[in-house]
Image (tube, rainbow, N blue to C red):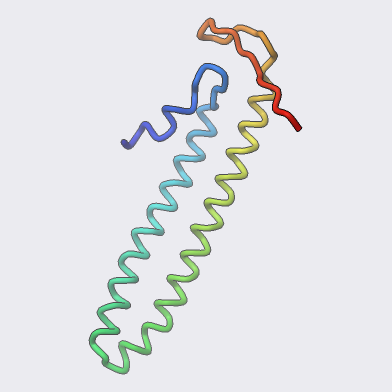
Length: 115
């Protein structure tokens, strides 16, 4: 699965630039790293909770804050990814000309969407 994250995007009518793919890949790696860190935080929070030791329970307050901040970062990264993807698709659509031949030799026809 790794390495073919965007293999289905280039379908002959829309080509996604390699630089954009690198940006997406970098963002997905950041998201995965944060999610991995969250898994560790959740495990530590659970252990502290189960121990019922006052110091451990107090430590959970900071750990939960860190977890919440990480979740906000993931949401922000996904929002940025969504915006970037939309902009890249809009830019590639503007670059298309109806009926023009693509590098694969197929004609590119834009569908007009009803308003």
